[in-house]
Image (cartoon, rainbow, N blue to C red; front, top):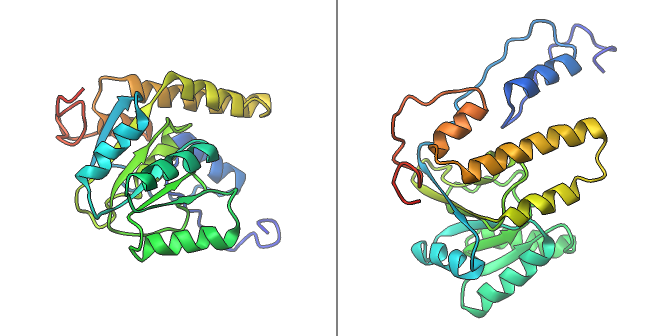
Length: 240
């Protein structure tokens, strides 16, 4: 299409792209000296908290109990984790529903609609859930495992607090998550594997770092914070 219509203006949009990725997009689309507009990656209304995973059900319930009757999303790495956690939470009386690509389309759509219309409080999902979902009053996003990149974490945690009110983003990680992602990446072409591994390393460094979470995310996307203390992450709040 670019070759057929060389004089047609082209615009490219993405929610989370580093400077390197933005340059690559412009190159692939053969854009000539494009104007690149980048909004702020800072979400000051989100409070980031990262803890080692110990008893995941207890840790998840502690977050849900802080947000009784409020909407939230719980992300799991594997479909089996979605099913197991959802059943356990349902047994304990929480209004939750599962969502992953292994479910039939009708059931997935029904659970998504129940969440959008507040008939369930919480969706327990893989990363298959979220694209095109714009529910403004999500008060918490929980990751029961480490995402494979900061881009993914920014997108998934960013589904909280779109009404600009305070929201909580909790991640419970383990060194095993690193191994799981490396295993899932094993069949990638060498160059793509190296890029993905670097992103995974950055994600693990985020989890284990003692640096402000907001500052780390901003720096990753080529921006800087204007605050000495964000007052909205476990590091700056002294909760680690």
